Length: 154
Image (cartoon, rainbow, N blue to C red; front, side, top):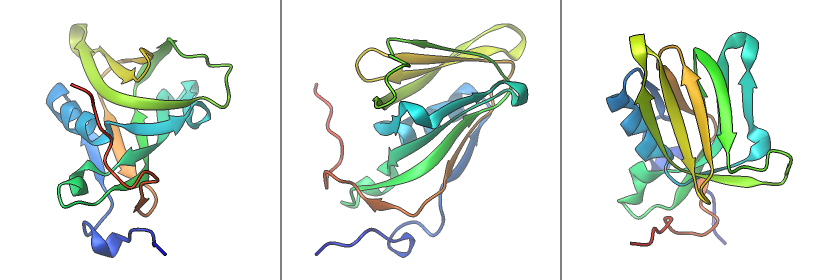
């Protein structure tokens, strides 16, 4: 019988990061690579200018020591002006999306567009007045259902 991973077995505390520039965003992008989430777990709170996703991210920070764990995390964008999707059937409430990376297209006067690149040629564009992205683990780690790290073809 296998048991779920425990915080005691990994890092001393859940991950809590904030990105305020493109370099910071690259760190968050690497940590959310291969995260999966149901389409129903993304929300744009227009009045609060916030776009957030509840993701099941692979814990790349522990993969090097042979652990294959996931953890639920909130990935949130602040000061959001618009959110657009491409290549996603938003009417399919059973759709599960896989996040490959996040990039930033800088605009004028500190504005920009964060693009969440998804498997299957989908994308989510988040237009921001100023970049402020947070990543926060909200559950205990659990063993990845596959028991191994995601693989990428060359």
